[in-house]
Length: 433
Image (cartoon, rainbow, N blue to C red):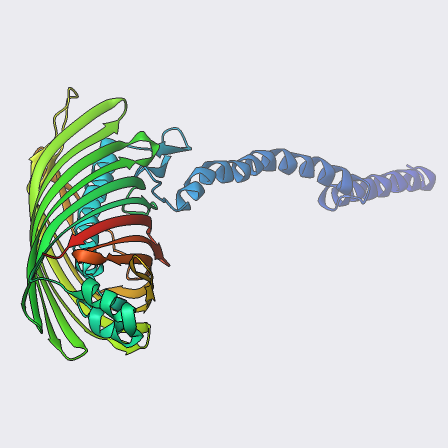
């Protein structure tokens, strides 16, 4: 082998070694052109794998939307129904089940009877005073009020004011009441008619006593045709008045028996019930007569306490279930401050006395409890607070005739009462024996 051949072999071996080194370097360190291609292919796969993770992020809000509706406030309507969320249908539904209907009407019945008794007894004392003949409510002292007129007028006044010891009287009263709905009670319309038969007996010039026999008939219709009630009451009252000059003290005691029939309508089914009850009350009123010529102002304060109860009863219906109502108790303690202004006018036929009466009432006691039982399980105890503060406004026109006959006509309305609107009219006559 000559030198020329050895050189060629040496060059070929060196080239082979360099080529192998380059190939190894290429495998261990990728070039810039191949690296992006490999990374681009690798990034395509992660994008495909992230797509399933994006779908679960959208599904949780759709599953959480229904529970958000459960935060809606549930407010009973006039029928005692509530808006509730149905988890199965994922929708809000108006539920007027038998329980809510029963308890709502039970409370409304108790509230109606209590309000009726309190209003009747509270007005009975006013009725007794209204029918008493006399100037400015001066309560059988007309002659002294009219005597300064002099002459023939004084003679007429004497003949009008002469009163005997016994004075029977009769008063008829009709009223209409609208009650607004509350979370614990239904709205209703109520018509009441009252007949009062009584007498006053003059024991002395400073002491008068008497008694009344009263009949009260009331029809109540619940709104939305949810039912009705009919009640009658027979009430015995004993009253008396004591005078110290122009200051007087009135007292009134009553005892009444109540007969109540109810009808409740639910899901085209009628539930009927009947029960009895009773109540008793005591009232004291203190006032003073302020007379000036033909004007009279009479400020007064009054306190009335009433307590009563309704017997338990069970409804009757063709439906499968009927509710049982336990005995119900009700109490009221109210105070009244009033002022009455009168003006006397002497005419050829007698005396005409227009007057304006304004009273401010406050109820001290709160709601009473009502228990409704389905089978042996008490369903619910609910109560409705009575109106705490309200006003009574009355206009009255009284007339006194010769030979002991007198009468009056009055209109009365409630003002600033958050629960009730009531208007009433009364007509009364009295004869002094």
